Image 1 (cartoon, rainbow, N blue to C red):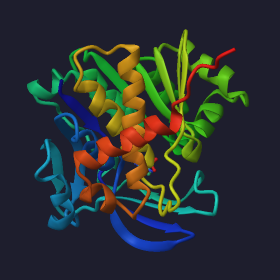
Image 2: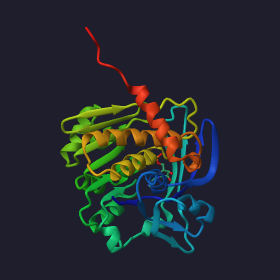
Image 3: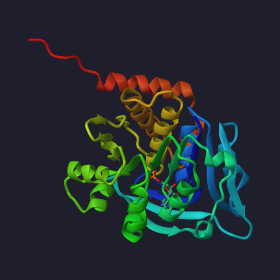
Image 4: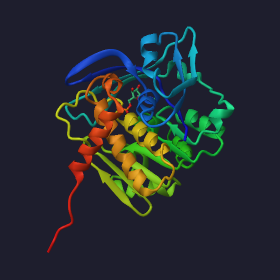
Length: 305
Ligand code: AMP
């Protein structure tokens, strides 16, 4: 199955307790597409400015990533995000967001893009997510990610998109913030009541919780000794998750659980270095090996009396 993603292709400035970088490749669609391309073909719908370098563009080459929907605007600047993390790496503090080329981005999907099997609305302004969703021709699976900024300033537009998707992938704090409900399980149920069949709650170093109307599945994060920069972990998770799912014929519960683990595996690589530096150097064999480590990490036998 094919995946279409709309989201940011960006430059980031990042400060963590372990280092600082003033300008590096980032963006929700960037992390997502590289991660998903380990399993499936991906098409990107996004926009970059004249300042986007050939070296950064090369992150997509040699992978199953179609760039027909990646526009470049002459004389304009690429999306820019600046964020900071303290010792609690689960919490990103945004210092600056400059939409730049995304402020007026009105993509027109081609016939092939409209007929995608899987659509991922990666983190970007909710009106753009809705615009792309409305142009597609009933994909088999529509998933969405977002962030606190859009809950703060575009809550109604975001809720309108929530009502039209099958699956939401979102941070724990954002679940509570969106529903204004401190209890995570209650807030998750309230989001499902809006329409989506599945909610995947990202809990940083504590892993992931998948909630459906009749089941809950939990997976830990990979216990890494060196977490360097958590930027992109969420988008990479979504890429591994949806990339694996869309490579399967049947989308049943067992495949969703495997997909959660593949997403977690890919995210665990992203956080080992700045930007996409680690993601760029790994192979599918590295991914498969870490999947087996995850199995060992979580396996336990039934007890005997
Ligand atoms: P995450 O996976 O949640 O850590 O996402 C990190 C990426 O999201 C960064 O590379 C940023 O460029 C991008 N990003 C940050 N804020 C926004 C925003 N408001 N809209 C779209 N992308 C964003």
